Image 1 (spheres, rainbow, N blue to C red):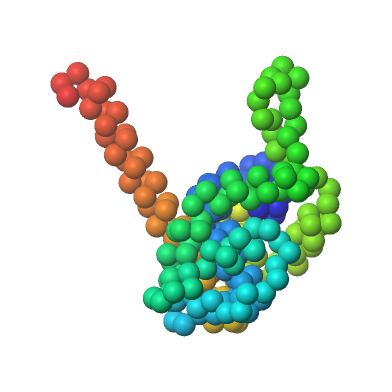
Image 2: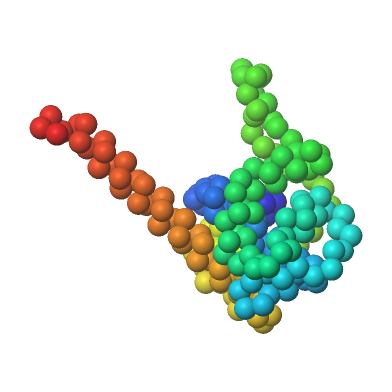
Amino acid sequence: MIVAMDVARDEESARPVERGDMSLALAGAELVDLLGAEAAHLDGERIVPGYRPTITDGMLDEAASALVREAPQESVEDWLWRRGRGLAGAYLAALEADGQLTRRRRRWSPFRSGTAVLADSATRRRAADRWAAREPVLTALAVAAGVGEEGAAQAPDVADDDMATVLATVHDAVRELEAERQRRAIEQTAYDNIWRDPGG
């Protein structure tokens, strides 16, 4: 989320990231972190919870608590759609609650929430360092979410099979969401044309 906001600020010509795409990428990122912490592993495409580690990150701890522990375990795809619902907004709220995000209010509009501005923090600097190093997983998630110029790039290869499965599923889910947006846009255009057509 921090990388996406920084890139959007630095690359004003970049297309805005869709919240749904970002939410899916964040759900994928959480699962990658849970795999890395051995809080879960994959059995094919099913997420099998592991031991319950102590996690200081509030959002990631919430994600660990959200793992389905009863059989049959959830698929990666089902996790992305369930956990990803509204996740971008939840991360923005968490960043703001932690003081890592502020709202720049405009003088003429004191009652509006204002523009979100990232604070200069250690977390932000770490994110910038990882982005500058083009870490494969982070870059792959950026490609999936359409972040900046990376959105038009090809995702890098990731050696770990489980993480590669998660990243591939994130890409597929984002494409599915984009197809749904296009379908709805076409339907809305057709509906609008009926009302514009005097003979309709």
